[in-house]
Image (cartoon, rainbow, N blue to C red; front, side, top):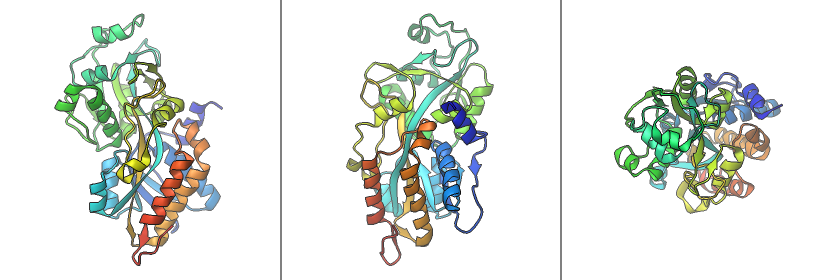
Length: 347
């Protein structure tokens, strides 16, 4: 069975933004980033079959996940935009990376094959700044000799909710376009100069799939699930690369997780000939002091099981599992920082 078929079987309809694996007392709850939703759904299904315990996750965007974990309405939050050390300390939170993957520009253009369009980060910024407005613009044509580009308006699609996917996308554009950095900047939500907003990766994928001439950005599994055409990108080393687990791994190869508070490494615009330029990690947020330590223990058991048993499932969806050395660092964080009210380690 091909990877795309496995992904489609595992994910079901991309529009289903909430999954519920079980409804009994042992369930754990999480909310946040839509970027890792496909792999969390797959892990949760497999974990339920093995242990009988469920994991319910709401794919509501990173901003929503941060709000819900801060308010203690879920057992863990998920964000693709890592919180700063100061913000973690202020809110009494612990952060660790759970999975890595890539954000990809996707398009819907009649007569143009998947992977046939090549783009640079600077050109994507020009499109989203509404300076490059048609598909046959000379700047696009220059990068794509031999491709029959229509004289069609580009319909820009972006996220409407607070989103870690948007954080990764805008962080990358800020690194490659001084104008984008000064005019728009980096954030989970920004003031878009143009375009229509979709909620979640699912919403953006649906819009791009329906609008002829559209361009958007989604996590790679959503592009595959919805059979959307993705663009090739020119990376920092000037190489044209395709999104894949190999190019995501290349971008993450040099990451120094211990050097950043909360292990909050940002993997956009990394060096390396094979690196995909919009690569990122998704992070889990939990409270340092646990009011329900038995529930927190179940959360950590779920992610511990996923780290040990979920690599193949991650590969099937073109995510990058955390390396063993990084998982050991994560477990050390659990042991040293997540405690019950008496100060006893939960893990």
